[in-house]
Amino acid sequence: MITSDCHMHTAFSEDGHTAPEVMAEKAIEKGLKMICITDHLDLDYPISGGLGTESYSPDLDEYFQKLEKMRQEFSCRLEIRKGVEFGMQPHLGEKCRELAKNYPLDFVIGSVHLVQHTDPYYGEIFERKGDGEAYQIMFEEILKCIENTEDFDVVGHIDYIVRYGKRQAEAYSYAAFAPILDEILRKVIRMGKGIELNTSGWKYGLGFCHPHPEVLRRYRELGGEIITVGSDAHGPEHVAYDFARAEKVLVDCGFTYYTEFKERKPIFKKID
Image (tube, rainbow, N blue to C red; front, side):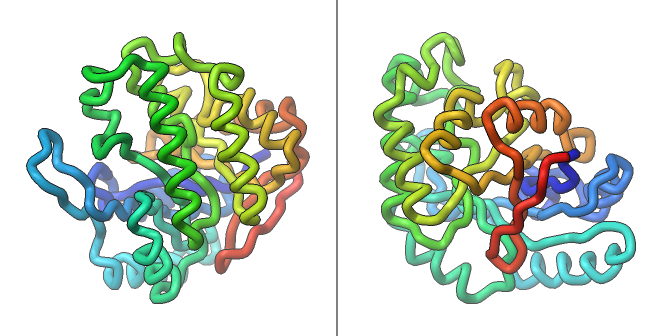
């Protein structure tokens, strides 16, 4: 049984709507032993329509003070760890380094939410590009971001863009993008980093988790070992979403362990 959810958002995120205490109580109800709260830190995020950029970040001092208070309050019922989901862009590597240096982090998810300076969520990229071309550009952007960033622990939802394609998975498979996906996976492994299994793909109706099980299997074949499991929940109803299904995917892909992070160090948990 997977007993830790390592990717979730609270009202400290721009797109979150729930107090962190509510997320923690739901995790206890679901039988989890640990959660890592990973609210968004998106700097230089382009405003839809090309009208400039904004930075979506909580007050980090307030955020970490809150998580520390919760860590103590819930200590007898649930372990709470402190994380962020850092929105990677090629020019933000130094900002990520400063974050890791200055705050008491357990875990940093490095996620890429932008392709050609726009979030696929808004659909603008698919007005200019076909699905397959947009996916290729996004994967190239992920590789570039990884090459320019050091202070992350796992790469988040590698095939995030597929959620928003006009035909979603019709233009997507591991085989169709094997060269660039293999570059990403090999680079991650060489850096001593990991990837996550993010269950929100099922929530969004894709029929698979992020990344696709074919990509997870290839990561394991290449020697990848570090893999966290996260729901990407933005509300309590999605905490530990489809974790039984996630466990089966991990086993089918050849994993016998999943990973948690504490004080930026991986902890390997056996899949029972």
